[in-house]
Length: 215
Image (tube, rainbow, N blue to C red; front, side):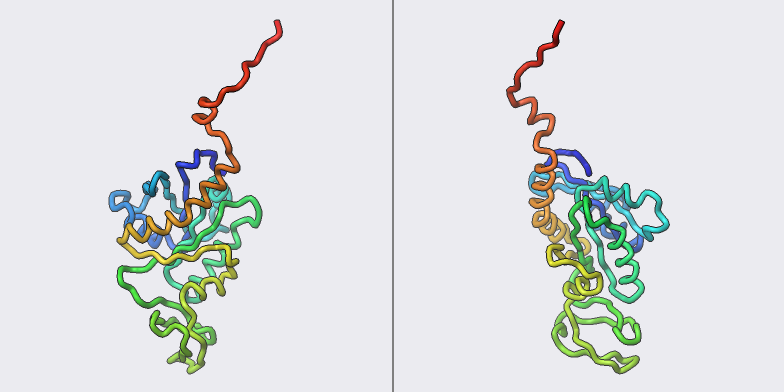
């Protein structure tokens, strides 16, 4: 775990496809070209790095996770293939000793629908937010099923505990991203403060007894 002070947080973006993660980072920092970037949220400096692909094919995957202060699972599409890959990423996170996990649902500006698969035949389908809570029918296999919200669907498909926040953000909307981080950062910084109660500057301001070396 990163031993940086509570005013500096290293957030690792976990995602299925490299281009999705780069799109997210570029929407926050247009000049970063999809690489690591920084975000200022209130009095906290957030360093954002990207980790994408198949955990089984990346030897440094676990160490990258353990070096972070927070993990952000970035979700764009929820078709069968994407869900399988998201589950592989979720399973790669150790149950104990890992940074706190958050889920960001990444959408385009003003997007009012999301992609998922038919639970019966796997056909890719677009679901409108306005239809959530109704019964839907797959045009391919004619099977009917309840239309869950994207937030409820990701919790169901990846079996996320209720303690994992699922937050919707929008491409190019820095305000939605900062709001998401402003909501999750207090818990992250509190956790860091508990793990590292004294940083170097705090120690210098404290008065402690001098050590005596025996001659």
